[in-house]
Length: 98
Image (cartoon, rainbow, N blue to C red; front, side, top):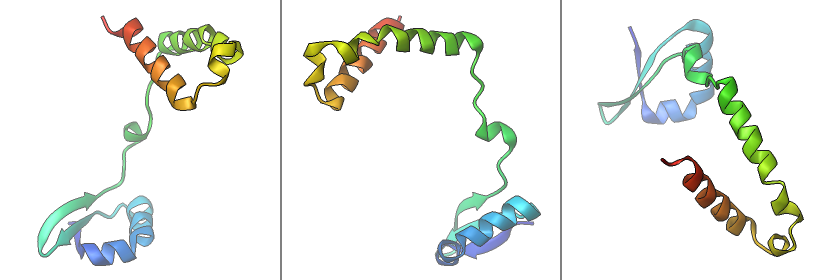
C-alpha cells in the first residue's frame, strides 16, 4: 500500500524518499490540498535504457564525419553556435524527413 505524503513534506524529504523507493521498494503518493498529484515508484530497468541499433549508430557516425568540413571552412568560423545548430537542424530534417 502506498504511503501518502503532502507535497510540502515531499519537497523537504525528496532525497530520503528516493532512497526508500530505490532500496526498500516503497511507493509514495504525493498530495496537494488532499488531491493526489503524483506517484513515486521505483523505475524499471527499461525506463532508463534506450536501445540503439547498430544501424542507427553507424548512420549517426556517418553524419558526424560528413560535417567535418564545417569546422574548417572560413565561412563558418565567424558564425555563432546557434547559426550552426540551426543549419544542421534544417539539413538533418531535409535528409531524414521523407
